[in-house]
Image (cartoon, rainbow, N blue to C red; front, top):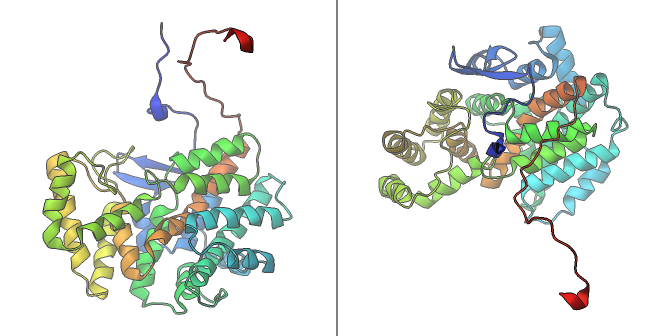
Length: 374
């Protein structure tokens, strides 16, 4: 009897988790049992981060303490600032994020301590410092002076401030905050599984998150939001959208921002993110991207029955906020550090080395011949 190969581990349940689940009965992604759309409506990102890392929503005292710690760790070492200053200007920001987290691991005094308590402290430091590292590179590559973080600003406000030198109107900040909540966690996706695999060898949290960032960079995962924007820029204007998408389908090209391994009838995060995309588009007086969005979405659903995933509305939203396209996935990183960290700690709490098998299909046994006999 031949072994059945499950490419991509499709349909294979490899472990248990308490962090998140797509609940079919309510058609929603949930974090620790809470529907993400409810978290987006009633909470800030900091509250969702607390929930993911600690298991429940914080009360006002717990939230203040959590925010005080996060805000106190935002600044970088002089060494890391210098490293970022000397990075090639053409570096992809995802590579900057990966390298920055790796350097944080070199500098952290608790790097080798894999206890739950130490990992919680390290997770919060990585969460606090990574936006600062990325914003510093954002400024440096444009020939601008680095802007240090401000403790009095929220997580979302502070990132805008460090990148642009100012905080936009509250509606823009809210839309950004919502995107962070929606991106924070999504069960055993490829980057999370990468983090858990690395952790299963009893490696440290910095190493696991560094590996997860490398995994997220790919266009079939986090890089999809960048590809969505590249696609919209190729289309250029709404009048071209119908012809472009029909031609892409005719050529059997992959249309980024559509389809999902878990969702078959629509990503539950999309309605929330699309609503905030519309709000941002209205504030920015933009109709072009919204019209392109609607035309491509309608054709994909009617002709292929393939629905958009959360990357589809997020890409143009970040664009309208003023972020460079190659910074879209790094924003994903900033958020997903929470989910990765929760899974890393969960893996440590009940660990077994992840070591799947492979079906060999190479050459049969061969003998090595002497050089003059070959």
